[in-house]
Image (spheres, rainbow, N blue to C red):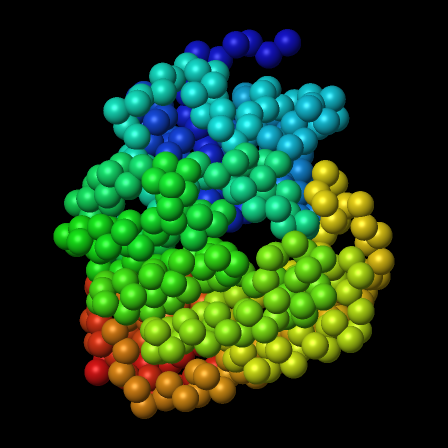
Length: 436
């Protein structure tokens, strides 16, 4: 029988899934640190004795990755390499009760809004005075900035409302204070995230209030870029575009998942919009904010998707010429509206259709990048690696968009600083540049 340890608690937080989980892990880590508990993010030192796994449960691949990660730490616990394993996040919220019996090595399971209970289990107090404080896992010069939690949308494919609950906006004053704290610590770029940015304010201000929030955040001294992720197309608040156009520190960038190009599929997905209305919205956005980069995400193989629907979507992608596009195969999720439909598109067909969409977008991205050669851009330098500085333009979000590669031999640049560069070469997902 293993003797009870007297070692101080050292926590390793492992984060899976989206940027919203990254944000939640950073809040948790700040609370632990404020309680005098040693905490690291995805540490490989092997010195920690407690692991907290922040899981994703969005689609099948993400769920499997979360389960595999839990099982790997369960094995580490069996081998005596860690003493406690805790699981939190979306997978735990949705499937914790079902998983308990199969993975008894996990000491406790917590949902998406169980942070105070998780802290108590770790013998830490939830410190209300720390609201807004985070221990950043990103480079200090940029930070994900969550403005609301949950979602009230009824998209037929989506399980997020089951895991995250109803939409709850964070009060504007609190967000402005949080932005000021981040700026004081050296953060220059805020990446606004939520399940649905465009719903912001409806619950507490009785109106869509993203435009006012953007104006107030853009007034925060030290914040030089504000980027918008995860906007919903139906009911898009057009006044937001005026703020983007008028404020120099709001990036000409919009991440707006559209999910499909076929009206038939959009109806089955319960998206509240048609192909025609989507095209008109994108055209209006581009007219009102010239030069804006639009990133979108699509689903391949939704129940009932015919070859004709797919080809309609391909023609639509060709017409729209999005700056960025991601695609994933439909995942049949229990307790969603779509689960009552027959998952009738074979896996191989889903994969093939997703590949065709990405191949088409690859050509579009290549052409758009080639058109940038010879132009000068202001970039933010993220890191130096492999003989190059890796930077981004205002049209590029971390991890998912273009890297601008600048030879370190071309001159000294500081990580986290802005620089003017001239584009000298371009590929599908990368730009080459030299200091201007």
